[in-house]
Length: 236
Image (tube, rainbow, N blue to C red; front, side, top):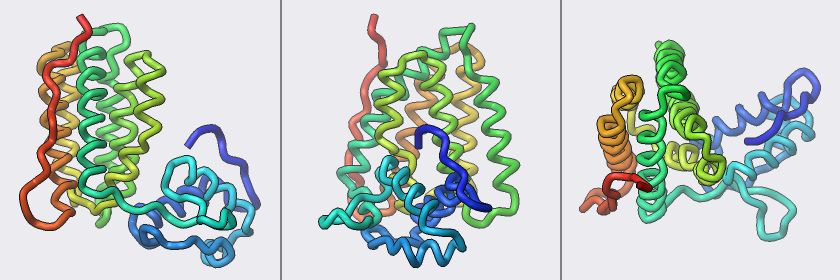
């Protein structure tokens, strides 16, 4: 989502957006389901105005699309297995390059911000049965901090434009309490803090490959789709 959302009545459009987004992520609004704006506004206890504005931003997130008649919206379909593989192959290209770049730059090293974000997630997840909403926000923030620290706006916009975290986490919650993700994120930030690009790249590679296989388990049993992992990322 880009830009600030306006306030509408007692509940801001940002709050309505977050609630509808959570409903989509948790499949309370099923993939491919038509969105009834009147019913949704009644359920949320708000007028149609903030609901329409929120849905417009969700369209920008590629979580909803206009129907064929152009008069309404439905939620997007889940990633299929090929789409999941393609998403993670793209992430492997960008994330491995990004993590090496930030690990060698002591001036813009994001380790402190990454550590605070991991700590924030762990506190927020205490006692929460379904951490999917918290985990997608944490994962987006963690990887976003690394991309932002690179100072490459083209890479950041391309990465953000995939909305990959939102779509992957819709499949199901493969990391029930977030412990696997936190363990892998801490390995990445420790290597970044130590300004060790080789260790940072390897930690990120392991994290993405393991995360891919966790999500891949959402599909029918059988041979796992082969993930093409690039070699060491360097322009020079």
